Image (cartoon, rainbow, N blue to C red):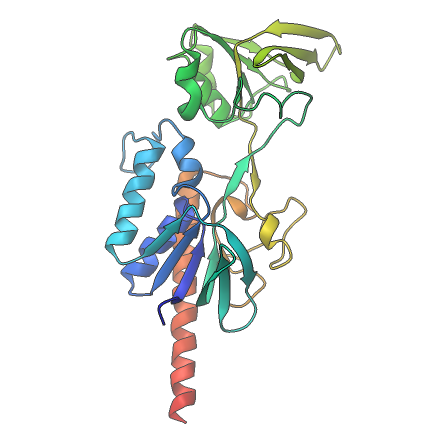
Length: 317
C-alpha cells in the first residue's frame, strides 16, 4: 500500500523532524507532511547558541541537518503541500492532501507548530512586508544603516534586537511592561549594546505611511501620552499562536487553542499524539520541541507495535 504508513507526522519543524528521525530509525514507516518549508520556526532564527553539543548554528542549517538525518533513516517527507482533510478517529487515520491524495496510518503525530503573533493595530496588515517584519533572518539586511524598532520583551525579541544591530544604525526596543520577561543573559547583552535604546511601558498603537512604513504612534501605558516616531522598519517578536485551526474540532484544545496532551504526548484520541509549539506547555525552545518529538515518537511506536501484535493475534485465531 503505497500511501499507507505506520505513522504520519503533520508538521516538519523541530518536533516533527525529531519524531521522524526516531520513528524511522526504529523501522517504523513514517511520512512527514509539512504545509510550508521544512524547519518551521527554526529557519527564522539567525543563530541557535544553546543547543546542547552544538556551539553555534543557524536555524536553517539545523533544520537541513535534521531533515537529512530523517531521510537517511527512510522517513518520507513531503513539503509545501496543503492538508485539506483529517480523520483521526478509529484504527486507521486518514489525511487528505491537496484535495486529491489520501494517506493512511495507524497513528498520527500533530506537530503543527505556531506562527508569529501580531499586534492587531491599525496599519499592521497594510505594511506587512513593506516595513513590518516578523523575521530578522529573512529581512534584516534590507535595513542596512537604517533605524528600526523591535517590539517585545522576551528572549526572542532581545536576541533578535542584538542580531539586527549588525545591519541597523539604531534599534529601539518598545515593550509594554517596565521589565523584561527574558533571561538575564539576553537582557544584559541588549543593554550593553550601544546601538540599542529602550522605550518601556509603551506600545505601538498605529503604523503610518504611504507605499511603505514611515512612522509609528507610540502610547505610554502609564501617562497615556502619544508620540509619533519616524522609523524605517519594525520587527515584531511577541510570541506565537498555535497552528491548530484545522484540528480544533478533531482533538481537545485549551482556551488558548493549544493541544492538550498527557506526559506521553497523547491527545484525547487513541493513537493520536502531539508535540512542539502547538501543545499546551510553558516553555517553547528548539530543545523542548525536540524532547516533545522524541516522546511522541516513542509513544506512537509503542502504540503501533501493540496494535500490530493484536491484529496478528486476531488473524491467528
